[in-house]
Image 1 (tube, rainbow, N blue to C red):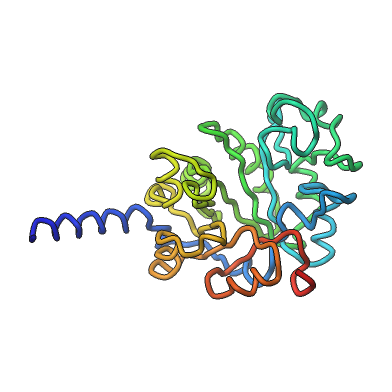
Image 2 (spheres, rainbow, N blue to C red):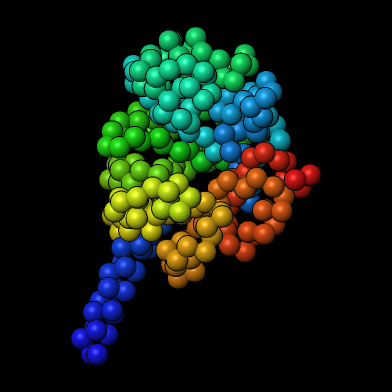
Length: 273
């Protein structure tokens, strides 16, 4: 029995160390607080302001919402704002964003609107520090080249922002090269929500690489707010908790005690659900 208890204690200790976020030399997160974040801008994919469009971003700024957006690279290594790795859902064409140069991407419209895929640089110039930003890096597998190229633009940006990614490699890059920037680990209940299998998704779901990436916040699918690792990060380690993606006033009100920041879409907070 003593051996079993010792093993259980050791495993528990290793687990707590594995999911531990940044605990010392923390950057100031206060400027990010007190605002709701419009998911991919204040968008409606059936309107003239579809997701991740300049029009949707302009609407969010005018309404006083923070903005959550997605950044990846074109073939000629220009940081562009687009969520999916593939173009078919939003633009109705085959291939990945990385298959086309920026100029070639400008041939495609977002959801049949007049909006085109924006350059990250143009987006930053438009927002001009008026609202805080959550910049999600889209890193497919092991190519984190978007990090230094997009960060080069962020270094000249004077507004409030933080970065996040599902891929721990993006956080590792920031820990090594730009440790002063607030960074967040995106996660989900991959094994339940997506039906994915394997050790990799188990590790990502439970954030067992936090000991390497040392995130300043955890952004988690709000439907799985009860996940043990997320709860420990918030309640034991006092790590900032971000909810994605809230889609009604009812959901927003229900999760007030479980998260600190909220990313929303499909409704106007304070209005009708």
